[in-house]
Every structure is written in structure tokens, then in C-alpha cells.
Image 1 (cartoon, rainbow, N blue to C red):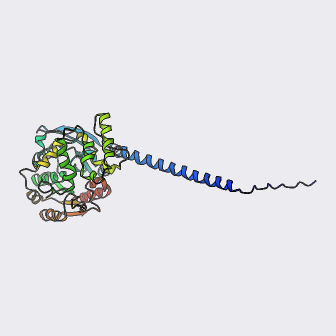
Image 2: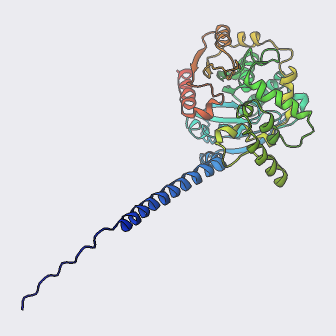
Image 3: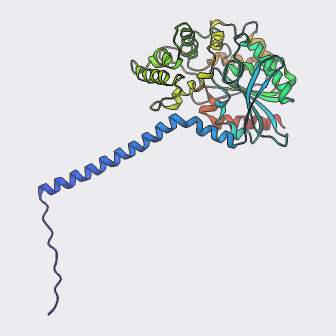
Length: 375
């Protein structure tokens, strides 16, 4: 007998079976979408909570060490230093801006160590350096930073300063030219740094004014106060109550400032990262105008005789006319007119923390600057 292959008869697709198949396919898609969103959300939250730790691991792996010294003036300066065993690299002193710390340079420190012997300091009233309000003046801080160069760096260096650190950098170059090879000014607020000059700037409305009010509010923690009262957050038309509530809950529970919020992009909260080691009396010196007391911005800039690169964030204004960057185009022109031979570089946006937002560009500028002064 011959064997015949029996063909399986296909069951006809009924309407019910078609619906089941469609539902199953839709459920699979929904599960896949939920999984993708969950993974993406998890990565987003992790980065918001740990981005600085990731950057700092690279800093330590690059051979940096953190140190603390006492100057003969009595000021304690905390700083990080790169490894330069041969002692042949050009020294570079990095001076951070308002409410920051030396760690704010974390994204650029590893690469800069390939070219420079790097020293990144905590300014007075910031980080682990001295918190003494009587020292919160440009003149006093300049004197101490010059002492640091002469006592611990021990040879002329390149100095790069961000924001108010840029004004310090310029003053160091003007008052101690023998200690400076060249300077890089990273978005310094020249002609927009004294109270009468900065009434219509973002840094006044979202920074100094809010900090002044906080000091007189009786509140213990700044971050929930800032979310409730900051100029930036008022633009969210009521949504600021969510980060404010999150920050308050964190502060009440942990008895320390809430520096990060998992659902907030870290670029929005980065300015608060070092707030628990910041003396708000430093901001008060800018609010009252005592920080620059006795000094002329024009004279500082005229006194610079060394090579100089001026990095400026792009000028932009809010719908209400508030200046978002450190200074406007007219003030930038004035800066360039007063510094002989100064080179200007402009970024693509008004982001003020250039070495953090445009880290590769900042590194390239510093490396190119080194090549130029080494010729």
C-alpha cells in the first residue's frame, strides 16, 4: 500500500480569531513601547542623579589629587592638581564662577592635563576654601590667588577664569603680570557686574536678587526657596511647585540641600550642584556692590598686557527684554577695545557655563592658546 501524505486542513479565519490576533499584536507593541520608555526613563533618571559622578571618575582616573593649603594671609585654599611628574608642562590655573566649585571643570580636566599642569581652585566662600565674608572682594581674592601662584605654582602660568572668575583672572594679569603667561576669559560679566549695571540681567533676577531675599527670609534651605521664587521657574506658570515640593521633602528628610531631582534634566539643576558648600554672603557682596569696590573695570582691562582670549556666550534676550548672557554686544566691544590684541571667540548659544556645555570647544581653545604662547 502506498502511503499518502495527509494535508492538514487550515482552519478558516473567523472574525473572532482575527480580532484576537490584532489584539495580541497591539498588546505586544504596547508592552514593547512601555519597555522602551521604561529603559529610556531609567537612563534619563540615572544620568540626572549621577552625571557628575561619572565625570569625576574620569578626573580621578586622569591622576588628579585634591589638596588644601594655607596662605601666609591666613586664607585656606582648596584645589585639585593634575599629575606632572616631569615638571615640564605649562601651569594652568582655573578659577570657577559664582556658586560653583573646582569640580565644575570636571568635563575638561582630564584632557587639559594632557597639555597643562592644571591647578583648579575653590574660590573664597566656595567649596572647601575659607568662608570669611570680609575677604569677599575682588582685590582681596586677587591678592590671595597671586600668593597661591607665587608660593605653590612657583612659576608664571596661564590663567583661565569663568564668569566672576574671569574678572579675577583679568585683575591678576593686570596687577601681577610677572606671574602670568596669558589669560583666557570665559564669559566674564564686565560692565554687567555692579548692581546698577545688572538690574535687567538674568543673573540678577534669577541669582543675586533671589539670594538676597533668601538671606532675609528666615528659610533654612535655598533649593526649595529658589524653585518657588527664581526668575527662571516663574516662567513655568505654576509647574514650579513640583520641583519646589520635591526639594522641600528632600531637605526635610535629609537635612541638606536637594541638589538633583531625578525627573529634572541635569542641565537645569547643575547650577545648584555645589550650593551646600556656598556662602550666600558671597552673593551679597555682588548685590551690595562691595565685591568690586575700589576697582575700575576699565583700568583692569587696560592693564592687561599678556596674550588674551575672550570667550563670549552668544547675546540673547528674553521676551521681557532680560539679558540672558553675561554681557551684551556693546559691552563685549568695550572689553575688546580695552585689551590690546585680545582674540574673541563666540559660542552658538547664551549658555554661560561654557566649559560645561561646550567642553570640547573649551578644551580646543585652551590647547590652541598653549600652542600660540609657546611659539
